[in-house]
Every structure is written in structure tokens, then in C-alpha cells.
Length: 406
Image (cartoon, rainbow, N blue to C red; front, side):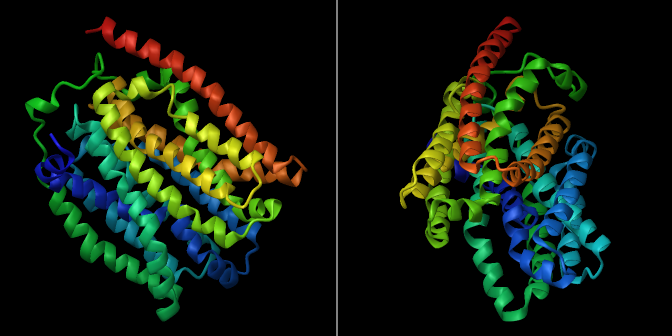
């Protein structure tokens, strides 16, 4: 089946997942940070003060996710959307009307939990459950919502804020969620997808349905996490300190920002390619190689100091993001089944959120203690290569375990 036929035959479910990842943008760091300057000015916060508040709110959301994420296993996707999206809207309104530090922290907590956390959790868990042999292709299309959000929403936010102010722009975000996104997503996901015969024979099938407690006790789960969490943590850490990096290299911040378009294109292309590869070979098979582009991107950034180096880095980072965005959604149902997928993914997402909150802070602490930032980036690349070796062992073991139980 061609990609166009696949989209046409599954348009409502793919569109519902796509919109979930798109509107998760309101809780993503890149979107919230658009108001960082205004927030610091209003509350008289330093960069470090706001960073600390943001980390506290993010870590609190990470601690909540393992408990809240289980609702994806208990309720239908449309009902979950009716629960989480109004609470995301409350968070966006909080950004408009918070006048006290405590209210700001709670607002950030809501945005991180129900935006980055639960919107993505619902989209990827539902998609992975509804598709089997075509799971990779479906997830690659659904996760494009993240990339579209990164490409369009910052420009829209900045333009709107220039016209009506940043607070009223957040009110506009809340209205967009309640009046447009919620009705559309709830309608699209209201009809459960029936898995058809062609979708019932994936390359790798979990030998049984694992519970979350069983998964946590599986040592290979933690080996997988050592690699799966690398792209979001490393990417967030590098981009958080991008201004300092540009100053170190003597690059133009404008040129560095322009290179993001290269990363976006590369991410989209390789997300779709990875979706095809997952369906053809399985996510488990791809585990040993998906961190290689990330390792190369770190080495390029740490070693090459020419003005065009950011474009090499961004293109390779996009390849890694494309691989990981699809692979991370497909790997867990392959290994552990779909019955408790929401609970299992909630642990993964929680640890990812925790890592993306801690990574920039640890790196900043190392910088303050005179640990060369470029050497830190090279060390990240070395870590990726070590993780590749661990994932190779995991891939062989998990493939053998699946065959032994068929």
C-alpha cells in the first residue's frame, strides 16, 4: 500500500494523533520560552531564577506522569482528550493571568504535564495500539505534528504578541484549544479503529502482555532507556545553551537559528523513512544504529568551528530526531505488548521529562565549574557510541526472546 493510500484509508485516526502532537506544542519548552523574557520582567526574575522555577515545575510533572498516564489504558482516546485538553487550556489561561510566583509554577506544571506529557502520551499510545504491521508508518506521520508546530507556531505567537501583547496571545491559545482543537480531536478519535487483517502480522510480536511492574523489573528495559532517552536529553541540553555555544565559536546567532530549518526538513524526511524501515524490519532491528547520527552530530559540533558547521550539526541532529521520534513510539508495543502500553509509556515519558529538565542544569553547573562545553558535547557523542554497543546486545537478546516464545 502506498503512503497516499495509507493516509486516505486511515485519515481520521492519523489526523487525530497529528493534532494531539501539534497542540502539545503549548507545553513544549520552545513555545513556553517565547514568553520567558516577559515573564522574567513581570516577576522580576533572573535567568537562573526562572530556570529553577521551570525545572521544579517540569520535575513535578515528571513525577505525576506515571500515575496519570495510566488513564490511556482505562478510557477511550476521545474521553482522555476531553479530560486533558481542558486542563491544558487552564494552563494557557494561567500564563495570561498569573500574578503570583506560586500561580506561575502551577501554570508551568499544567503546561508541561498536559502539553508535552499527556498530549504526546495519548497520541503515541493510541497510534501504537491501533496499528500493528503499519505501526512505524503511522507513528512517523503522527509525530510530524511536533515538527509542524515547531515550524509555524513560534512565528504565529510572536506576530500575535506584537499586535495584542503576550498575555492576550496565551488567551488566544486557550480559545484555540477549546473551540477548535478539542472538538476536532474528540470527533476524530471517537471512532475506534478496527485492526484489519493486513495489520495483524507485525515483524516482531511481544510474546505476552507485560504489566508495568514487570517491565520495570526487566533489566533490558533500562538498557533500552540508556539509548532511547539520549536524543531528547542531548538535544535539549545543547539547544538550551545555544547562545553560549555561538559565543564560544564566534558564530552568528542568526545563522545558527536559520539552521533549524535544515533540522526540521531532515527530521521530517527521516521520520517517514524510519516508519517504512520499522514496518519492514522492526524497531528492535534498528536499535543498534539509530544513535550513530546523533554521535556524529555531537562530534561535528564539538570539533568543526567553521561558519557552516551548524548546518552539518542540524542536518545530522534531524536524522537522529527522525529516527527516534518514530522508533520510540514503535519499540515498546513490539517488546511489551499493547494492553498496558499507556502505563509503560508513562514511565518512559516521565523519565524523558526528568532528563530534559536535569540535562541543561547539569551541563550549566559543569560550565560554571570550568568544564569546557565543547568537550562536554564530544563526551555526549562518545556516550552515544557506547549506547550503540549496549543496544546491539539488547537487540540480539530481545529478538531471540521473541523467537523463543513464538
